[in-house]
Image 1 (tube, one colour):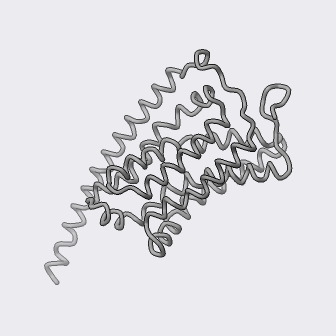
Image 2: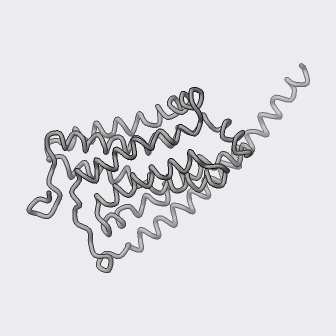
Image 3: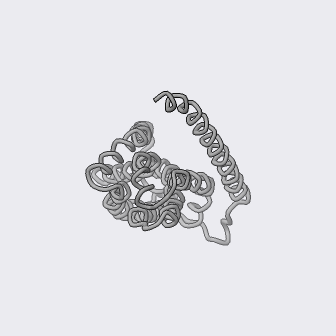
Amino acid sequence: MASVSGQPAPLSGAGLGIASMALALGTFMQVLDTTIANVAMPHMQAQLSATLEQVAWVLTSYILASAVATPVTGSIETLIGRRNLFVICVAGFTIASTMCGAAPTLTAMVASRVLQGLFGAMLMPLSQAVLLDIYPPEGRAKAITIWSIGTMIGPIFGPVVGGWLTESINWRWIFYINVPIGILCTAWLWLLLDPGRAAEPHSAPMPQRDSLTALRGSVAMDVLARRLAHIEHAARKVARLAARPVIEDI
């Protein structure tokens, strides 16, 4: 229900708790996937018939897509509404995770990771905005603090969870694990969040500066990725040169 001023009214009771859990889980999925695939890279390389340099794009594509999508989050939210965009992003992230788990080739995997990054990039800024909507002013500081803890521990747990799933079940389950979480979050958020106000498409065009920021971000991340690739190549060459005397001695 919206308040008299037109802003979404804060939630209370069980609805507030469930919505908070859905927001936390949605954001946790996004930050978890930044590192969860690291330990599964050798398994992906073998099953997808890729070189080490090629399979590295499973990680790089996710980061690049996130960097491109983040700056335009506010403009899209203005057009279609905060609740609608958040639910679309959670659902899209869940579908992209399913596509990643089922990807038969490296190309399909990278394309699915790009979709994951595009949808996941908007979850973090949107979750903060929604938290401010559903909590009364006196409870917002505590809510943001608890939310921040989840965003910090996600990347730490990523390699641990990824390693356990890879060794115990299959590396594809590092993506499939998002599916039940994503379905729950999508349903909860759709039912509990206020639709909010969405501007008319003709009255709220995407600001030019947001498009320019996205373009600059994509170019900068591309340059960074190329620089990192050169550094990685040089480091491997140094490592091979350093290991040569040891091998010859053996």
